[in-house]
Image (cartoon, rainbow, N blue to C red; front, side, top):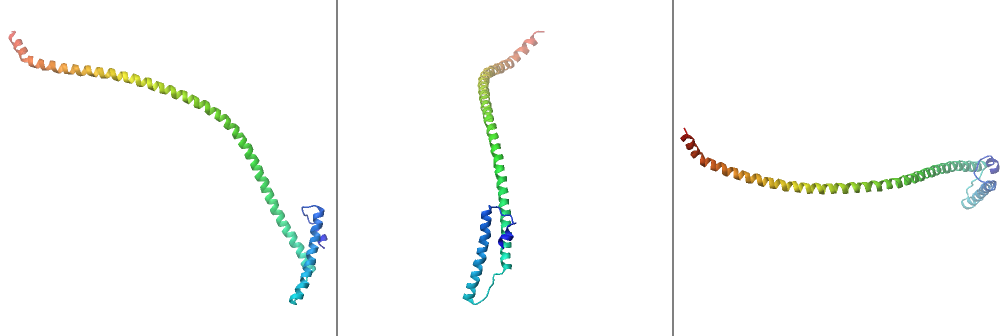
Length: 175
């Protein structure tokens, strides 16, 4: 009976395995029939294995097989998709690795140029600091001269004020 119902049903296996499934289903039917007899002898209650129950067993097997086949197919598809993604990622990583090598070379060149510019700026800053110090010295000397001139001017103005009455007398004496 199982042969009849499973011959047209697609099972992903060899013909030998399919025949083993059919034989196993028949064996299970026989075992269930024996257990029904044992059940009667032990509990004195009759149970029967009918062709309908056997066909129900075959339908249940087909339904479970179909469900598991779809589930495994889905998992297989997900695995193929995952592998494809991994392959894409590998290609991307290889490409990025190549780009990284180029960028590292560019970075070395840029770093060298930056070091040169920094050295040049440092040298110019030191030269500017020297010039600033020289200008500050000149400014300090000039300020000292200005301060001395201011002191001399104040002294001269003081003397001028002291001599002013004599000057006015001399002017008045002339004419």
